[in-house]
Amino acid sequence: MEAIAGAWQWLTTGANWAGEKGVWHRLSEHLWLSGVCLVLACLIALPVALWLGHLGKGGALAVNVSNVGRAVPTYAVLVLLTLSPLGSQGDWPTVIALVLFAVPPLLTNAYLGMREADRNVVEAARGMGMSGPQLLLRVEIPLAYPLIMTGLRSATVQVVATATLAALAGGGGLGRIITAGFGNYNTAQVVAGALLVAVLALLVEGALVVADRAFDPMRGQRRAGRAGRGSSRTGARTESSTESGTAAGAAPRTASGAAAAEGQGDDVVAVRKLT
Image (cartoon, helix red, strand yellow):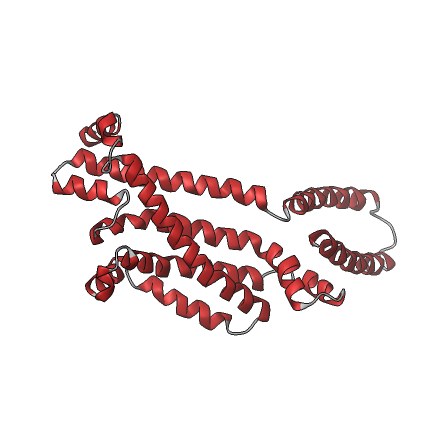
């Protein structure tokens, strides 16, 4: 409790927020570093994952190779890069280490999202004469959007939390507040820096959840689908209760045929809504 009280006092002291060593400056450095790493990771992972998911070939190998990076601690990679000739190139060791850390969740989730897209809808779009690029951009990516965003949220939170390691390589960011606290034996400052990183990660996660819902290309269809499933279940229960005792031989065959025709029609409708 004493550490928490001291951290609160440190955070509410205006002098700790101003200047080059203040919170605002360190926060801007942290956001810039995290943003650069995420953009580079997205440029590397997403095109590869989306294209391999579209082709359906080589994706398992790419996912397994990228997941090897998860077995190597980011701190170890950062130390090795810092001791290499890249150590004299500013923030590049930190950027490379964080990009390698962010690629696996982005690549894995995007690839799985592409492969788990409703194949009936994809084949219906192919049957309507869509070319490969049209199928990728207008059907498969919207269907894979939830898993793509899940990977992006996971990678973003991980990078924001792990970017504190930049301070160990002489870089900026909120990690400098923590390392300065250790250097001055100031436990309150260490706790305050950790709280700032945690709050920032939660805020970024919340912002991405809002963006996910706002930009979902199928949010209307998903709501309609949930409403339709609810009404169909209610209607099925009502029909079952009112039609008990009717002929049992022809009804299942009629219902199954109608369901198949309705399923094909739903696939075509889904494609038209996506495009």
